[in-house]
Amino acid sequence: MQLHESGEDYLETILILHKRTGYVRSIDIATELGYSKPSVSRAMGILKTNGFITVAADGQILLTEKGMARAHSIYDRHLVLTEFLNHVLGVDEQTAEDDACKIEHIISEQTFEKIKHLVFQKRESQK
Image (cartoon, rainbow, N blue to C red; front, side, top):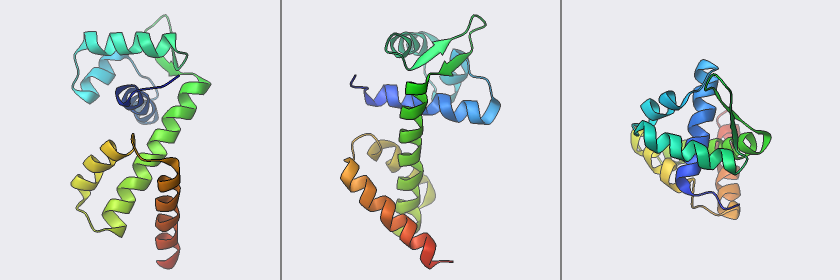
């Protein structure tokens, strides 16, 4: 299934919030992203229908194996692209973070892998 940028943002946010607090609810996502509760509820319904999340009886949102894989993929792209823009190209930290959020959804796998390789080369050369 083709997941749109907003869906990827939700999955990444669920992953980040879970790492931060260990427990994720719709209200936590709404607060983190600055979205309305109805918008988040609708998105959670779509993600649940497509097998990316489950919602427990107490409202806790959990990533499925499929959701976890996709969330980690997007989060990895985000981290690598932020590091590339900031540490390799010298873009200021906030701009690098903001731009990585946009680029992570549209960059090809081939280009991402090349950037990732450069980032790891830079890390190794600094040791």
